[in-house]
Length: 81
Image 1: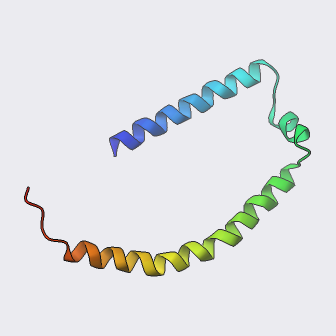
Image 2: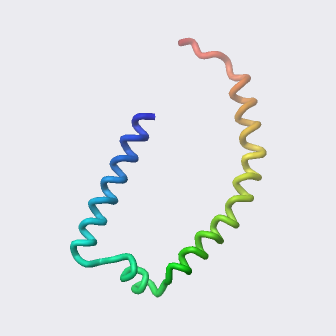
């Protein structure tokens, strides 16, 4: 778990440094969106559509994967530690 937290901190630090560099050069989020011909509403609608598409599929997969994983985990032979 600590390895995950260390990597998460590294990613956050890298994002902070990149944001500071972009800000130094005057590159802002509205400027990037204008360059891509997008609006904040386009981003919101895209995220909503991604959620609407993915949530039922994740739940459907979990109905099969989680019980199978649990059964496999229960019936594994004990480790010799």
